[in-house]
Structures are given as structure tokens and as C-alpha cells.
Image (tube, rainbow, N blue to C red; front, side, top):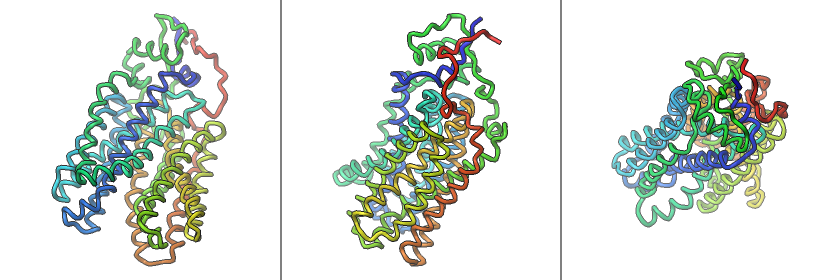
Length: 452
């Protein structure tokens, strides 16, 4: 009986309509996800005014979603590897859509925070599942680029809030930007119909017909015998304890280092998202100019993510990631010394590319580091543990700003996180890298062999 190693077939496939469909859905879902996370920032001044809350209370209201994201990334990431990615993906979409819209119906800070916490569970859960899904079904030669492109949708969602939110809030009140979040529920039937299930789970459950359809879609025109048995390598087989597997095969120390890298990467991202406009105001820039800098920052993030992942596919993605963390540390340090507006725009663009852009490439790296069977779990725990950096960053930088130190020292404090993230990536054992994207393919394209 012939056997087909379908993961090898996926690795060596050429990008086609099947891959484009998965890319489209994952990118769109991350755009929606980014919108749902960033929507509070656009509405917070009016929420504070209407609910009569202090800045401290508003900070806790905004952070409630981050706590939910931390738990959601770990819980739903692991659950997706055990129960199936499409089901968990649509569950997360339903959760953050319904509860983000529900936040628009609240009238007090406690109820608002509860709805945002539950929405955060779904927002956080989507991230590792989308990364794992794109990572598994991508051709190995362009895996990092496609995963990073998916996560660029996260930044696009933030830009969408800045552009659309202003119009909606002005015309219909702050609640309107939350009510819009219910619309993604309409996408759920289409996602369930078209999104493929994880290959290791299909093999474990013996769903041969679905595996055959996937094989024909990733390799159209190839002969797939009706009696073929689909197999994967031992490392990619479905695990009953995916969290435990993160520390097996010598991966334990590298797993912790990935968590540390995510912690400091998300520290930089959330420190800047919370304090960039305030730090620029300290430097003498108006609010309008500061918001323009935010758009430049996000544009840099998109280019940094895609450019960094492209370099990662062509060269060694670990070395590229080390360079990006180092660039983030250096560019942030330089920010405090820039006096020219023109140069500052360039510097903010570079900072966006080497902080948020770096974090998006880090997601691509984590998605490729772990075998397919534990990919959602690996990315989920990295995102969840790393989210703690995003939670403490606004607090720590707020304390530093309160000390009224020279401006450059504020940026240097954020840049220190980039240096520490670089050290963590340096310590990852790249020989355990599960993706084949760093080595040229040497197997025959059909990957059909006699069953051992």
C-alpha cells in the first residue's frame, strides 16, 4: 500500500489558490482581531468622560483585554491542537465579536472591564491558531513571509481603527465602533466551510477523504492513489499532551527563551502604544503630529514584518530576528536625541519596523520552530507568557515618565527591552528548528513511498 507524507508534500508545494485562501482568511481574521484590540484606544477619552472615571481606572479598563489575551492565547492555543483549529478559531471570533459589541452597551467601568476581559480571551486565542494554521499549510520556502504577512493584518487593524473610528465616533458616538465588531459573525459559516483541519489531527482521527482532498489541492495534477495511506514524521504526530511536548526533545530551554523574547518584544510594543504620543508631546509635538507619527509607526511595522520575514526565508531567520531586536534597541535609544522633525519621522518608521515588526517576525519564528502537532500550543504559550510584558510595560514606563527624567532616558528604558530580547533569541537552539525552510528541499516532489 503506497503512503504519502502529506507534511512533506505541504513543505515542498508551490503557492497556489489553496494557500491563497488560507492566507486570505488568516489575514482578514487578524485585521478584525487588531481592530477589536485597538478599538478601546480610539474611544477611551469619551468613555472616561461619559462614565466619569479617572485615568488610573481607565488604564485598568483598557488593560482588562490584555489579561484576557494572556489566558486566551495559552488556553485556546493548546485546545486547538487537541480539538481542531477551525472550530476553536470560529469560537474565538464569536467570543470577541459578541463581547466587544456588548462593551458598547455598558455604562459603568466594571461591566465594561468584564466584557473586555472575555473579548480578550477570544482576541488572544485567535493569534496562535492563525499563526499555526498558516505555518502548517505554507510552502516551506516562504513560510516565514506568509505567517508574518498574516500578522501584518494585526497592524492593519490598528490603522483601520484610527481611520474609521474617527468618522464613526464623530457621527454616532463611541458605542458605534464597538457595535461594528459584531459583523465578523457573518464570516463564521464560510470559515467553517473552507478552512482545512490540521493534518496531524486528521491523521489521528483517520479522516482519509479530507486528507486526500487536501493533497489534491496542494498538489493539483498529481496522482494520489485511492488506497494511499497518509503519514507524517514522528515529530509531527498528534500529541495527547501538547503543553508537555513543548519541553521534550531538548526544546525546554529554547521554549523558555522564546517566552523571554516574546516578553521583551511585547514590552516594547505596548510601552510605545501606551506612551509614544505622550513622550512626543513632552518633546513638544502637538496631538495631531503625534497621531501622524503613530500611523508612520504602524507603516514601519508592516514593512518590518514582511521585510524581516522575507529575509528570514532567504537566510537564517534566527539571525534576522537577532538583528531586528538589536535594531530596535539602537533606534529607540537614538529617538531621544533626535531634534529634527524630518529625521524623527524616519526614526519612528524604523522603530515601528524594529519593535512591532520584530514581534510579528517573532510569531513567524515560533510558528516554524515547533512541529505541526504542537504549533498552536507553542505559539499560544509564547504569546500568553509574553503578554505579561505587554501588561507591565505601560506601568513601568509610566513610573519612569513620572520621574521626569530627560527624554532620552525614557526611550533608552524601552530600548533596553530590545537588547534583552536579542540575548534571549541568541540562546535559542536553532538546531531544533522544526521548519524545513532553512534547507533546500532534496526529497522527490510527490513524496509517495512504500509504507514502512
